[in-house]
Amino acid sequence: MQKTHEITLGDVTVTRIEEMHGPIMPADQFFPDMPAQTWQDHREVLVPDHLGADDTMVHIAMQTWLLRSGGRTILVDTGVGNDKARPAVAAWDHLRLDYLGNLARAGVRPEDVDLVVNTHLHVDHVGWNTRSVDGDWVPTFPNATYLMPKADFEFWNPANNPDITGGVNENVFEDSVAPVYAAGQVQLWEGSHTIDAHLSLEAAPGHTPGSSVVKLASGGDRAVFAGDLMHTPLQVAHPEHNSCFCTDPAQARATRRKVLGWAADVNAVVLPAHFSGHGALEVENRGSGFAIKNWAPFARY
Image 1: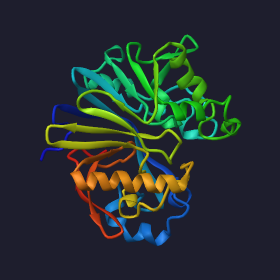
Image 2: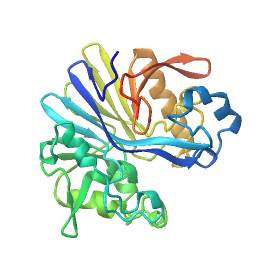
Image 3: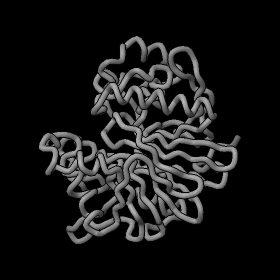
Image 4: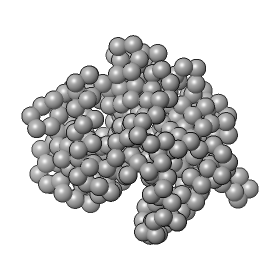
């Protein structure tokens, strides 16, 4: 099958919009409880798309899933964003990337977007919610409703969580969440939320209190836009291992197993937020975990 940046699932078109990709963190820091030997045992699957060939750096992508469904243009997660002060992550500080150009090349202008889904409110999922105009943060997508999980909206508000200072989410609520809320474009939800006849949101907590997934059911096709359920394909075979960014490790493990189990049972395409390479995959049950059945036909980064 020809490799592409776009696939069709039932009546929904899915386009992969890149912000950036490459090495991000050493494996032993990103996944502190993952044995070094486990990475070695799976190098054939991981290198070079998901693990450096000559080092132990984990490679990931920052990207948006662009969905065209029911006549609407929908973005799932919005990356890191430009011009933003990110003191905890030097590589993300005051970026100048052509994300909006990539979106335009997919045929979408900011004013065309009807709905933005933030699967959770971590720094690398909300960045393009806003952009700087004359020194003010304004909604990037002026005609869109932004769906945000209520639990994360409350958790990441610095007024409720003084521990944010010094962490990866420092400044994020102020520059990427609050301005959209002030503009009246945010819809908070909890539990579950129906987007349209093909798409629904479900709570998938653990990585953050409000982490969620978008499920697709259209015709005979099934898919799950899995947010930060996983950051590496190694978590397919070893779903018991979390990243260092999971706020509730036990719940994150349980959620990962639940969603991967559903995907294996119904032959759903799994589209994590951060997989580089082919970006998405089908999984199957195997032993105490799961295995990669097929990679999606997206062109590799």
